[in-house]
Image (cartoon, rainbow, N blue to C red):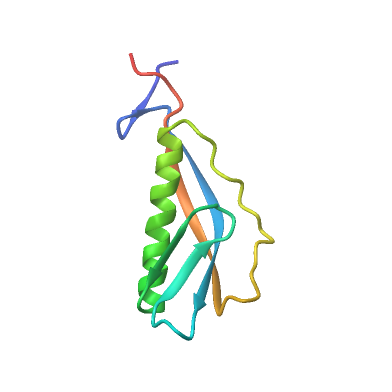
Length: 104
């Protein structure tokens, strides 16, 4: 069977992972801080909730791309990840396109 080439990747596979973000508002700051609870080191901020949501999605995508490029595993999402201190929380779907074949 011939190898199919899709979007520059051989035998490209797709996975969707659902990570969990929490948003915090601190009294002494006008910024909203966001963290992905089940992807260590993924944090961002924004002046509004809309901005913080956009920024944390971008941070999560960049962190995932960095780990994939280095050949490292992505953290496994924890469906129970929650923080009671957060004023808002949401699930962030992350779609990864991975290269599973070798180019010739």
